[in-house]
Image: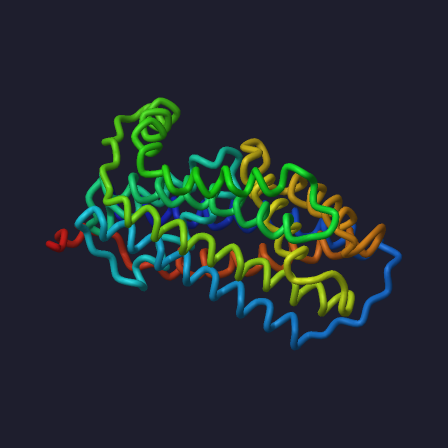
Amino acid sequence: MNGRYVRGLRVVVVLVVVGYVGRELARQWRAFAALPATIAVNWSLVVASGIVVLASYTVLIWTWQHTVRAWGDRLGFLDGARIWFVSNLGRYVPGKVWQIGAMGVLSQRAGVSPVAAVGSSLVVSLVNVLAGVAVAAACGAGTLDAPAWAVPLTATLVVGVVIAPWMLPPMARLFSRVMGRPIAEPRLPHSAVWTAALGCAAAWLLYGAAFHLLQVALLGPSGNLLRSTAAFTGSYIAGFLFLLAPGGIGVREVVLQQLLERFGIATGADAWLLALASRGWLTVLEIIPGLLFLAFAPRTGTPPPRSTP
């Protein structure tokens, strides 16, 4: 592909993403400013929250790299971070397949085989959803007002993670039909899938801790870490699974507001304030690294030769 064309397309993508996200952030800021709640922000905790979010990103990137290695390929951490953050911008386009597709294409350009590129993206996406729902259910089951089905749901999801290696081939066939392109069925060591599940679960717990820090920074001590993690993770997964909402915008906020009230963390204006602030803060932390990597990406050319295991 012509290098000038690729650079032009990159600029267009940056402008589209910046325009869309800027519009959404402006809309949410107006809603945020209209809320009657009065807050005194603890900015040191906000910064700490951001650091924990970046730590969760690091865990997810490592988890994906480990899955790529299980296919016999190699990917440096910096290349992995660039691919992960840039492909993450695809979440802000309707339809979650864009993110997975972009990760596969960028991985191939970095010298990773097509099977490892698309397969690892698919594996991590599937396992991440399973681990996220399991974390939300487990943390919710630890609360006093947890529904009766929380414990059996947690057990079912843990079993789902254990049997994930056997679920991947049919999932790959389904994804192949959705994408309209052939995808080799993943044949990974079971330990690689289970390691990915542990990494994704750890990342969700870090996400929950970051949200709890932001919650305390805005509203003061309220709720507890388990309830905060259950509310945030549950709303994030709900937004992710709603394919028509770019980045889960709208869906995540509504679900989070309802869960915050259910778990007694915040009510009314405070719940909406926390939901909107969480969206704005996470959007900044997701978008800025991706745009920086995209804007300062190395010139495209012949992909480097694939490394041997």
